[in-house]
Length: 141
Image (tube, rainbow, N blue to C red; front, side):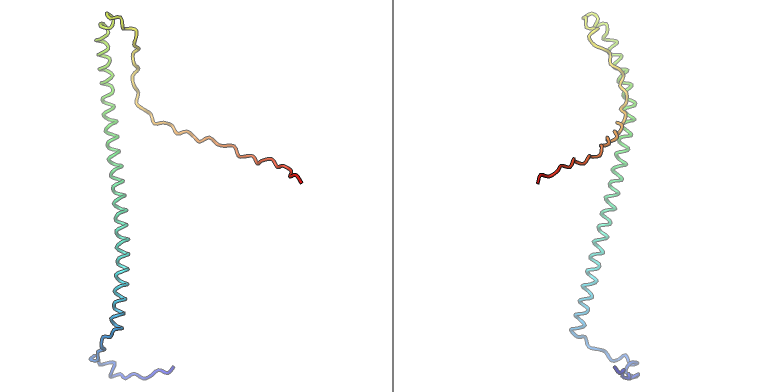
C-alpha cells in the first residue's frame, strides 16, 4: 500500500477542528461505561477488604476482652475461695456444740478443701489396626 504525502501546512495548522459525530459520542460512552465498571468492581473489592479488616479487628477485640474477663475472674476466684473456706470452717466450729447437743455431730463428714480446676488433658486418638482383605472364594461353575 502506498503512503501518500501529507501536507505539512495542514498538520501544522491546529485551527482545523473536526466535528463531533455520533461515532465520537458512542466511543466516549463506551469509555465511560468501562471506567464506571472498573471503578465499581474496585470499590466493591475495597469495601470487601474493609469489611474483612473490621471483622478481624472485632475478633481481636473480643479475644482481648475475653482474656481480660477470664483473668479477672481467676483473680477474684483466687481471693474469694480461701475466704469461703475460712467462713465455712468458722460456721462449722460455732455449730459444733449445737450439733453435739442434738446428737447430729457424726452424720456429716467435713468437706475437703476445693482445688482449682486443671485443664483436661487431651487424649490421643487410638490407632486402628489396618483392615484385612476378605478371603477369596472360588466361584461355582
